[in-house]
Amino acid sequence: MVKINISILGSTGSIGTQALEVVDDLKGIKDITVKSISGNKNIKLLEMQARKYNPSIVAVSDESLAKELKIKLSDTNSKVLSGECGLIEAATIESVDMVLSSIVGFAGLVPTVKAIEAKKDIALANKETLVTAGKLFMDKIKENGVRLLPVDSEHSAIFQCLEGNRERNIRKILLTASGGPFFGLEREDLVNIKKEDALKHPNWSMGAKITIDSATLMNKGLEILEAKWLFGVDIDDIEVVVHRESIIHSMVEYEDLSVIAQLSMPSMKHPIQFAFTYPKREASPDERLSLADIGRLTFFKPDRDVFKCLSLAEYAGRVGGTMPTAMNAANEIAVAKFLRDEIGFLEIAEFVESVMSKHKVIENPSLEDILSVNNEIRNSGN
Ligand code: NAD
Ligand code: MG
Image (cartoon, rainbow, N blue to C red; front, side, top):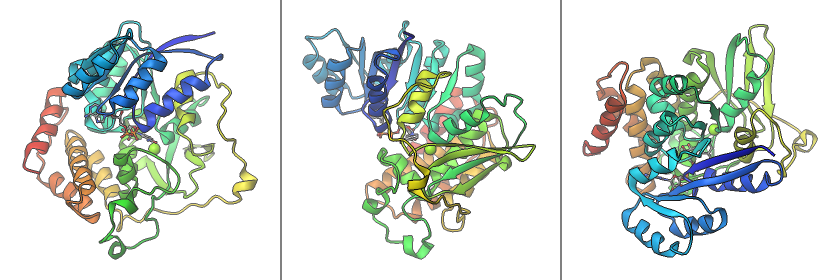
């Protein structure tokens, strides 16, 4: 049986917990040892995961919660570490082959970069890292000769559509979008939207930040930039298609006008498993796709007048340099404000646009430049 040692950064989140289910599903097919896990605050879940998977390292961001967990796990072999140093240690353990980067937001950047430098293959769920530091990230992947396997369902789909077509004569990438909970609404309908409404996604159950991003369509904007870096295509060669059923996870149109699509039921366990077993396709206990039961697949153009984040992200991608870093930081702040009921739904895009309009772009930014732009925007009284 093929053996692999993995580290899961963000094991308490939506992706992290589903990744551990995939580890269980693959028992008897692929021997996956979980060497490290990490979480921000949920030490109850981390304790349960540590007792079940017996990792060498458990990293907790919060210092005092780490102390608490250390006492709870004192009868186990797991070492409890805290802060960013702890995360970096979890990401770079010598015996680890692959790191699943599933922390949400900018906080995932440094540990993921350190994992690449430690020559770990990366299964990437955290799209914000590619958005904020795309060129640097892809250069590091190349320099260190490691594999980068997309876990975002659309990008896993595109990756799968490219398999066997290595000549890469891509004409267009068709990035599908569910349209989120507010599909078909007008701007005036969105003025008084409450976070409870925005947190209800029609097809996927995900962490709060990405669920709000899906409602504003910033998630699709971030995914455009993610696709640009992962597949080396121009922003103009990526077309967003609203597909309410989330059955086609994305498509690639080739120069000969053939369009190849990847279909499956909407489950993140599919792309996670594919990243863990690639290049093999192993059996999955997930629900099978029955097209006759679904009956109809529909497609629409996105409404850019209502969902302004889409065009903001495309603009940031065209400008390049640190503009996507500024956009991402502004979006993380705006989503957090919306979740605290401090701003309205439509103000998320307005806030992002205003930060972007003031940003002085640094071309070809270093990691230090990216960290400092991110910090400046976060500390600028926003
Ligand atoms: P989540 O909120 O459910 O989980 C986030 C994880 O990151 C948790 O383990 C949390 O403890 C950890 N975390 C949060 N802030 C942290 C910090 N400051 N320092 C260290 N750890 C921190 O999020 P999620 O939905 O699992 O999403 C994770 C990433 O995967 C995001 O970048 C998201 O865009 C991407 N993604 C998620 C899905 C999905 O279906 N959930 C699909 C595609 C891509
Ligand atoms: Mg996605």
